[in-house]
Structures are given as C-alpha cells and as structure tokens.
Amino acid sequence: MVMHSSTLLGLLLLVATASSMALFESKAVDVPDLPAGEMDDDAQSAVLLFMKLFNPSKPKSRPQRSFQHKTCGQKVLEYTLKICDSLDIKAPPMRVAPIFQSAAHQAYQEDQMVYAAAVQEFETYQMFSRLVLSPENHKINGFVHINNQGQPDVSARRADWNSWAQPGDSIRKCVRCYKQFSEAEPDGECRFHRLGKDCCGNTAPCTTATAHVHNKTCMSEIGKFIKTPRSSGPFDGRSYKVFAIDTEMIYTEYGMEAARATVVDVHGSLVANFFIKPTGRILDLNTQYSGVTEGFLDIAVSLEEAHRILFHHINENTILVGHHLSNDLKVLKLIHTNVVDTAVLFESRGRYPSLKVLAKRHLHKDIHNEVGGHDSTEDASTCIELVYPRIHLLLSSRLALPSGSRRMRRRQPVLSW
Ligand SMILES: [Zn+2]
Ligand SMILES: [Zn+2]
Image 1 (spheres, rainbow, N blue to C red):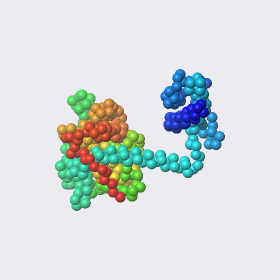
Image 2: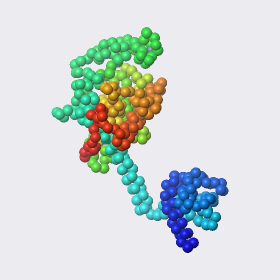
Image 3: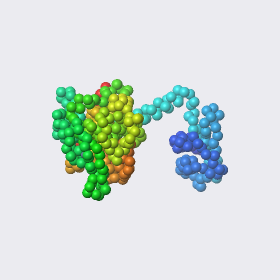
C-alpha cells in the first residue's frame, strides 16, 4: 500500500515536473546558487503546485540543489520535498535539457518552434487583414492605384487633398509664408513662423529663408511609381508579414521628398531604418518635424536602393500599416493595396485625428514632443499599436461595424502566387 502510494505520488510528481518545465526553462541558464534553505520564487511556486496536488498538511521543502548533467553538461535542478511528516519523497530531477540528446529530436523540437511561430504570424496577419482598406476605399483615400487601363492613377476627388498638381500647372503656394511662386523659381525671401500658430507668439515672422517651399507633386510623376513585387511562391514569407511604415519628408524643389524610411514589425521591433537621397535640390530639411539633420546625405541611399531594401521585406501581399499612409507611399513612389490606415480607421464624421491625438486617446502615450523632430520608429510603432484595440474589438465581437463599416471589409486575405 505504501509502495503503491509512493508510485502514485512519483507519477504525480512527474506530471507536475513536466508542467513546470516551462517555468524553469527560463531560469535554467543561470540557476543561482541559493543559500541553504532558500528557494527562488519560481521554485517556490512549483513546490506549491506539488503541494496543491497532494493536498498535504503543512508542506515543507528542503533546499534546492543544482548540478551539471553528466552527458549534456547542462544544469539540472533537483528538489527534495517533504510532503508531510510521515513521507519523504525525492522528486525526479527537473531536466533542463531534453532527455533525448539526438540531433533528430533536437531538430524536431526546433521544427515545432518554427511551426508555432509561423501559425502565430499567420493568425496575426489574418486579424490585420480584416482592417485592410477595400479597393474602393483605397482609391478614394488618395492612394495611387492601377486603373482599369492598367496605368498608375490617383483619384481625382482626392488629387488636391493629397497635394497633386496637374501637368502644366507650375504655380505653387508656399506652405510657410503662403506666397505664390513658380515651381521653377522657388528662390526669394520667405518669412514665416517655424512652428506655425504655436510658434513664438510674435506678429512678425521669426524665421527667414531664401526660398519658398511647397508640397505638390506633379501628376506626371505618377508614371514613375512602381508596384510592390509579386509573391515568389507559397514559401514567400513576405506574404504573411504585417509591418508599419513611416517616412520622414523634406522640402526640395520638387515639393516633398522622402528622406528617411522606417519599418517596424507587429511587436514594434525595428526591421529597417535608412535615409534616402532626394532627387531635387534641398530647400528645407524640415528638421523640427522630420528629425532629419545636415549630413544625412552621407549615409543616404538612392530611391532605387530604398526600394530594394523594402522589397526584401515586403511583397504585394504584405500588410502595411501607417497613418495617412498614402502620403508615405507617395513620396516612396510605391503602389501597394494591402494597407491599414489608422487615419481612416479612426476617422470620425469626416475628421481624421492626428497620430498624436490617437496615441494620447487610445494608448495614453505622448508622442511628437521631441524638440529634434519626430521619431519615425516611434510613429511607426504607434500605428501598429493603435490597431490592436480594434483587433481586440473584432475578436470580442463588440465591433458591430456601424458607421465606419464601409471603410472596413470583412474578408479573408487575398493572397496570390
Ligand atoms: Zn515664430
Ligand atoms: Zn515662403
């Protein structure tokens, strides 16, 4: 009878040991040499778990012992537990290393981890895909798209909103001093308040520059836009990725051009971050917003090189997240349809809240407070983070898809290869 109980308890301990493995694995690398009689928190939790299983009276534990495994050299933890006064049980060693040491078993375990990560990644992709703009909304929100004739095009309704100028129209309005000037001749005295209406408070402009700047792009440029690449096949990992992208822009003779691009993943980790050489003469680095400073050209890449870097991570199936993303894709001269735009996602009664307002309201986070300009990594991460509350609503079926529903589509991701 006693033997039977011991065997049973031994089995239970094995079960408990197995279920606690994960608990100890993270601690296994640096098991502290604890003073006699003391256990760390995780070890205590595990002991309490055993106690719960056995429903003992007055559980007591003896010091933890750790030693090196003879075969694999990894640390092994051993507990000797006193379950109750009448019964001493020596728990089987908690092996940090798997019992099987074969390469085949190790490969199997690695495969399992890769598989689990892939499943998680695909589930995340599917969640984000439910908030992707429909082709119609992609078009009406000013994204450059491929029209029925197979040509890059931009919706005429939003052409002005998104700062497009008709070919032949060379008159521009300075976005700093509001004077009109010819695009070909931007030089002239431009007096303005650097921080707009929140500037110095003086009536007289506090800043003077030698050229006017504008933010229009000529429609003739649209022919230079390129589509994100097609998937190379079912094993193209880019097809299941979700990234946020943020571009910092500067003023050149051709309006606003990309000077920096930052890509982060769904956890906010940096994927790519690089400077881009503009094609036109630089008129204003726009540092207080762009964060771009003198000397960036020394480490900047061409737009073609920027595309090569981006396409290493992105294909046409990749979901891109951004705030007013049509502007970022415009300066990057990219056509991409799988987009989640947080400006559209949080649009209310025709108003598009700023990223700063959304970050404060939904994430209780203060952004855009840096004196040296916006942090593109922070902006991109904030965009991704803002999507999670929406996904949570979708998951908990609390989003009844009311007024904003026309801007969201419930659909399976469209993948093509
Ligand atoms: Zn001022
Ligand atoms: Zn001006």
